[in-house]
Length: 423
Image 1 (cartoon, one colour):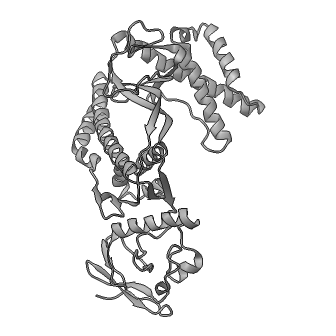
Image 2 (cartoon, helix red, strand yellow; image 1 turned 45 degrees about the vertical axis):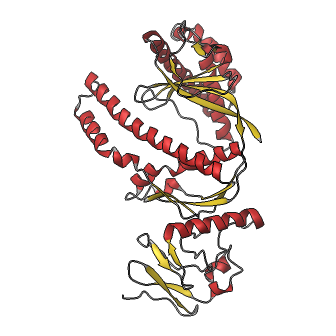
Image 3 (tube, rainbow, N blue to C red; image 1 turned 135 degrees about the vertical axis):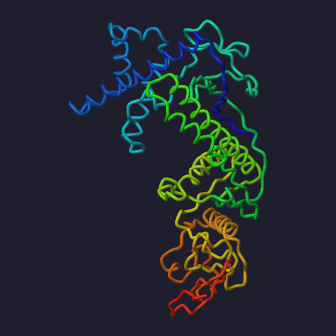
C-alpha cells in the first residue's frame, strides 16, 4: 500500500553576501508587516469591536508600501509579506476557536527568522533553486535525494540562532506502507529513554549532560563580554552553536528511534504524559527536558499516520507502574527509588518493563472493547484495574511496602489497614 503525503525536506545552504543581505532584509520586513497587521487588528477589536480579516490587511499592505516611511517594503519580494499576513490569519482563527492563545508580536531577538515563498516567488529548474529578487541560485548542500519528479510547492528559508541557513522544500511524496504485525507498549523514563513491553530498554543518550561543561564554559565567556559589543555577539554565537549541537543530536536520535518503532509494529501504545507539569519538579526538570518526550510523541504521531499504523494513547492516570501485569493486583504505593518488586502472586517485576506491559494491555483494551484505560472508582477501591476486571484474585488484599532494595509486598485482608514495616 502507498500513501500520498505533503513532506518537507530541509537542507542547509550557504548564501553569498548579496543573498544573505537580501534574506536578512526580507526577514525584517516580514516581522514588521506581521507586527503592523497585528497592531491594526488589535486596535480595531479593542476600540470598535471590529474583526479585520486577511483581505483587509492585504489592502493595508498595499497602502503601506505607498508611504514614504514604509517604501522600503518594495525592495523585497511581496510573497513572503503576504504569507506573513496569512500566518496571522491562521493565528487568529485558532484563537477564536480557542485552540491557541492570542497572537503576540514578533521579536527581533527571540522570534524565528524565516520567510515563506510560494511557487510564484521562486524558480525550480534542473535541481537548482532561485528565489525572487535574486539572480543566482542558492548553494544548497543536498544531503539526501528528493522524491523523483518532485517540484516544491512552498519554500521556507530560515536562519537559526547559530547563524546557519536552511531551506525547507515542501513536496508531494508517496510513503510505501509495508505490512507489520504485533504491538508494543512504551514506557518513557530518564535512566532508560524508553522501555518496551518486549523487555528491551533503550538507553538515554543524555545529549545535554554530555555537552554541559562545554555549554557552561561558553555561557561564562558570554557573561564576561561587554553588552552590545562585537565580542559579545561572537560569544553569543558560540553558545548558540553548543545548543544547536545538542538539539541536532537529540533530533537525529529520536528520528531513528521512532522510524524503527513505526516500521516494526502495527500498533504502538504510549502514555499521555503532561511534560509541562512534570518539569515543575526542579530536581528532574533538566533531565526531563533533555529526554524530549513531547518531541518523541510528535514524531510517532505523524509517522504512524504516514505508515498506516495505530498510535494509542493511554490515560495519564492509569497506574501502569503499580499494577501487576501478571495477576492484575494494584499496589498501594510505588516510590521512585523502587526499581523492582515482587507481587503476591510471586511474580518478580522490573518497574519499567511491568509498566510498559500494562500500557500495552490498556491500549489493546481501548481498541478492543472501548475501555478508557483508567481504573474506575469501584475498581480502584478494591485494588483492581479496569483492564483486569476478570481476575477475582485482585480483590483479596491490599499490598504493603516492605523494606529492602528489591521490594516485596505483603498482602493483608482488605478490611485491615496497611502499616509500613519497620524493617
